[in-house]
Length: 294
Image: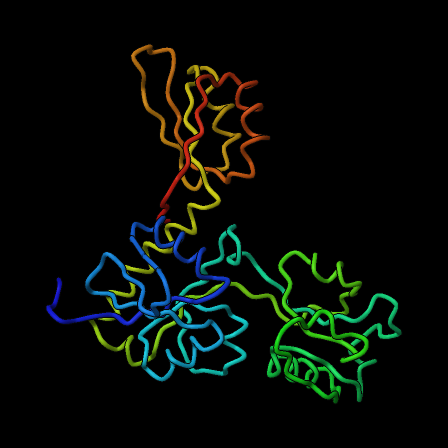
């Protein structure tokens, strides 16, 4: 039930995650508008107050209680060391919401083969804390320098190796770099302030918001398949369906046929439809899904 004056302070990530986050909210049923130079995006829910924050700073502001909750990559959450509660992994097959890797890399023709070879060497990175922890795990002492950008161009003149983020690996190849180790795999996470979770109204608001966001990311890789199947082929068709649950079977006007509706992974469709057709299914329709609550 709405309580007058109550608002949830929500951090929206600025930069590479910004556009895809707007897309996520749209699929979840929210009209999130980020415009001009304003750091306060508008949203069609008067109980939510949005603030545009760099992902590198998001966890710190959530931990301090400046924000009740927000979205940031696991990499920057760990890098900040902030004490926040992770409520969900929002990984989705969209730009910047896929899994990204922080990798340790050196020049293709470098003599370095392993992190142990970097003992006493220089490493450039934007993620200094993450890199130092990785080195400590391998009992390696190196000089780790903060990089203000263009990290991939620094070896071999300005650094012996780098730790940098990579989604496709294209930039590393373009700069003749070779991956030595994967330091961390990261995806966007929904995080919350511990005290905010103890507030019944804020906790309930976050749960409802998160349900819709997760329904959108879950639907991103699923589609609905609907088809007509002869009664005598029903068992054969059902065995082909990797459904979330039991497929829905409905009777048709023609008693010799039934309709089957089910949800499948979109990557399976191109292999699945020919098999369904061969097993007797007809009138096969693929329908996109905006939301899926499992």
